[in-house]
Structures are given as C-alpha cells and as structure tokens.
Image (cartoon, rainbow, N blue to C red; front, top):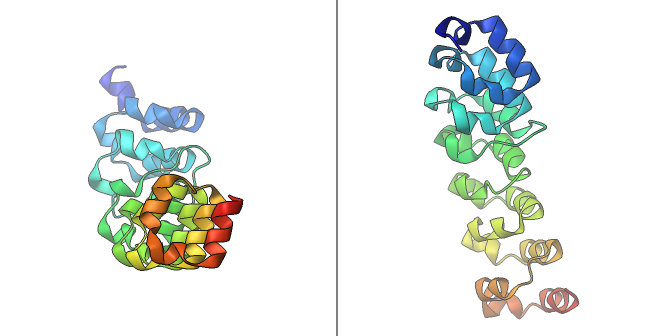
Amino acid sequence: ASPKLRNDVDLAREAIERDPDQLRFVSDKLKDNRALVLLAVSRDGSVLRNYVGDKFQDDREIAKAAFNAPRFAASLEYFSDEIKADREIVLAAVKRGDNLEYAAPELRGDKEVVLAAVNAYVYAFRFASEELRRDPEVVLAVIKTGGSSAWDYVILGPKILGNMEIAKALVEG
C-alpha cells in the first residue's frame, strides 16, 4: 500500500476491526497510535508481540486487553517488570497460557496465581516458587490436571512423594 494509505487512521481502524492482524500493514507512526493498538490487542493479543514495539510495555489497559482477547493472548514476556508484578494482569495471563515463567518472583510464590497457572498449563508448575512446588495442594492440582509423568516424579522429590494423598492421586492417575 502507498504511504498515504498506510497512514490513514480511519482506513487502519476499519481494517483492524475486521482483522487485527492488519496492524502489520499500517505505518510505524500508526503502530504508535494507542487507540489502534488497543483495538487490535483487544481482539488478538498476539499482535502486540508481532507488530508493536516497546512503547506500550507499561500500559496496563493494553496488557489487560491483550490477556482477555477472544483470540490469542499475549505473552507476559513483552511487558515491563511493573506489569509482570501486577497480580490482576498476571492472573489473567496465566489463565491463558504459559506465562508463569515471566511473572514477578513474588507472584510465582502466590498460591492462587500458581494454581491458576497449572490448571491452564500443567507444566507451568516448573516456574512456581520452590516452596509451592513442595505444597501438597499445588502438587495435587498438577496431578489432577494431568501431570503425572516421570518428569513430575523427578521434580517432586521424595518428601512430597511421601505424602499419602499425593501418592494415592499418582496411583489413581
């Protein structure tokens, strides 16, 4: 498209409303337009990673939209440390995929966040704090979500495997 078309805000808005992936065709100037970026990520969070620079990495509203998008969610990896420490946003993020790895350390030690993460993606367990990787409630959630492979036995260790409730859950598998 011509530079004139790539800089047309109304045309960009119309295209993005139909397909958020169209953000890739707009000018760099329009990729810095917060309203257009918000429109795109509220429909498909992955456009943030693909087409938008660092300008919005601290933007709470864009982060919330990106993790609540009906299509693909964004990754916490592309946001600032401040966003990675925002409990509300991190909870939304871990419910949509493998994002616990990028959460702030204090949230990797938050039981509610970790339980939400392993219920969405069982292998997020490996990014939980050491304390929560030894917590029977978290371990049971991992097992019930389908994580009873040999890999899990190695990471759980003998102390947690000595818990009868956990051993029973593993056997019932």
